Amino acid sequence: MRFAELRLPVALLLAAVLPLPALAGAEDVRRDITSRMAAQFPGLSPADLAGGSAAFDAGRRAEAERNAPGPGAAEAIEAGQRIWKRKFANGRSLAGCFPNGGRRIAAAYPHYDRRVKRLVTLETAVNQCLKTHGEPLLDAGDPDTMGAVLAYLRTLSQGRKIAISVSSPQAEARFEEGRRLYFTRMGQRNYACASCHLNHAGRFFGDTAIPAPVGSAAQWPHLREGRPMTLQMRVRECLERMGAAAFPAGSDDLAHLDYFLSYLSNGIEIRPNAWRAPLAPGHW
Image (cartoon, rainbow, N blue to C red):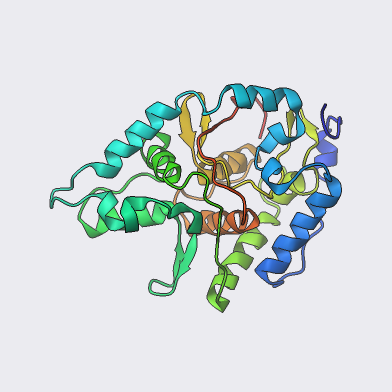
């Protein structure tokens, strides 16, 4: 059974986004969006919504279950582990930069770091370690390096519940910036992220149901055609398909969106390296 068996015309996707009040607290925003999704999909829990399109499509859900973990996951995890444990010129490694060698830490990322006065994502933390030890940085937009590292690192937190903190005015300001970006129309098609994922979650665009924002940070990286795609990589893809200039890989704008979406997924278990179908031509 499919939810909302409606194929959306492009014009409908241009319907007005209902913005949330600016400067509402992060927890108020999370509760508001979670309540909207619960009212719209009373049979689906936030953990169900983490399945993305498969939450609304029994056929795709069965396909995802058959392909769990995603084809190529073992290879991606192994590649990430090699990078993670590789010795630097000074004898250190990425593993040595993180508590417990990186085990059980991913659920708290992104977070606001008062020392550097910015958000720290997993990508940021990995590259800061490399920079500190004089090693070449990883391209935050490259599935084969940064994607592989996150595939391995998030596996070390598999099953832990996302627990993002927004506990200071500075953190609230970064969350609000992520919220603002999520609701901002941009690009040739004049869409916002919320135009589709909030207003039309569960409805079909072509043969694919539009994922909801709640839970959307829980299963990254996704394995698409064997390559690990991070949440930030997917946001960049979506912006490009909207006809917008994608934010640079590893940018503060992507970190703010990551923070916003990850906070909406609080309390949901990390289940990385899930299978996702290849993107059809014209799909966003």
